[in-house]
Image 1 (tube, helix red, strand yellow):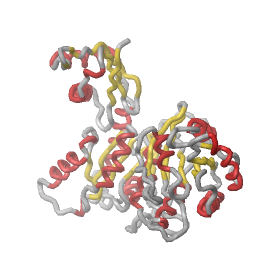
Image 2 (cartoon, helix red, strand yellow):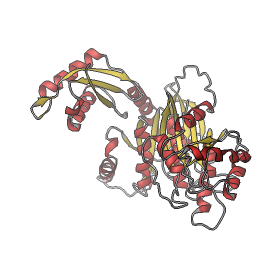
Image 3 (cartoon, helix red, strand yellow):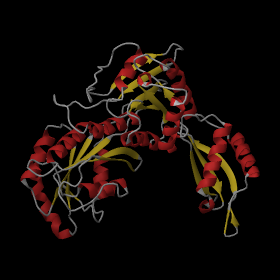
Image 4 (cartoon, helix red, strand yellow):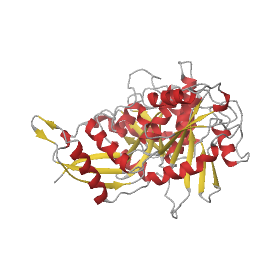
Length: 436
C-alpha cells in the first residue's frame, strides 16, 4: 500500500514552506519573506504516531501579474490532483483575501478532504480572529503558528484522521517494478517492449503518458510481475510545462509502490542532473535498483564505449555502487530478455535474511583481519550484529560507543557483508547501537 500524500496549498506568503519544514522536521524548503519564492514542489517523507505519509510543498495559488504565478498555480493544481489530503494555509494577519477565496474555489473542485490551517497565530490574543475563516466553507479553522510550533500536533492528528482507510490486502507475491527517469528517455517504449504488445501509448512528444498504468504479466519462467509505467504529464487537455519537475512527483508515487526500480537513462543524451535527483529518491526509499541505459542501439560504438559509459555512471552515481547496469534498446529489444530474471534476483536479494550466527561469524572474521579503530585511546568494541529488517536489509551493530564507529569502518563492515552474501541491486543499512 502506497503512503498517503498530503499537499500544502495556499496563496503566496502565508507560511506554507515553514509549515512544511515543521512537519518534515528539517529545513527542506527555502523560507523567504517574498511572495512566490517557492517555485517548485518540494517533497518529503514524514511520519506521525506511526503513520507514514508523503508531503508536498506547493507554490502559492494566485491570479495576477506576479512573476511565476501561472507556473505556481499549475504546480499547485497538480499537487492537489495527487493528494489524498489537502492542508489549506491562510494567514490570520491579513484575514481573508481575494486570493484566499480564489484558492478556496479551486479546492472546492478537488473533492478531497481539506483542512483549513490559520497560520501566524503567534499569541493567544489572535485566536479570536480565526473564526472569520469559517466563511471559506471548510469547517472549523485550526489555529497554528508554524514558526513557534503551536498547534502542529493538532494539525498532524487531523491530517492522519483524514487519510483514506487502508484496505485489507492479501499476501501478494507479485514482484512490482517501475521505470523512472526524465521525460522522453523511452520509459513507455520499454514497457511495450517488455510486455511484447502495445499497451501503453508511445510518442516522442514529452509527457504524453496521462496516468501511471499498472500492467501484470507472467515471464517465460512463470514468475508474476506488475510493471508500473510512471506517467508523464497531461492534465485537463493541456500538457503542462516543467514536465521534468512533475515527473519527480509521479516517480515518487511509483517508487513508493515498487519492490524494484529501473532508473532509465538516455544513451543519446548522457547523464543529466535530473537523472541523479530521481535516482536519489529510489535510493533513499531503500528500493532495489537497476540502472537501465536505453537507446543503446543509436550510438556509434567501439570496444571502449560501454566501459567508458559505465565508468561515467559509477562516477556520477557513487551512491548506487550496488546497482547493476544494463544497456538495452526498446527498438531492437537488445538484452530485454534478461530483465525479468535480473528483477527477480534483486527482489530476492532485497528481502534476504541472514541468520545471526552466520552474520556474526562474518563480522568477527572481518574484525580479526582489520581491527576496530581507536579514538583518544578508546577502542571501538563490536559485541553483536543482527538483522532487524528486510526491504532493504537492515542490520544493527551493538557496540560500546556508537561515536567510535567511523564512517570508513562502517563502510568496511558493509562491504564484508556484501562480499559474503549476495545483496546485488539492494541498499544495505547498518545502524550502530550502544549495548545496554
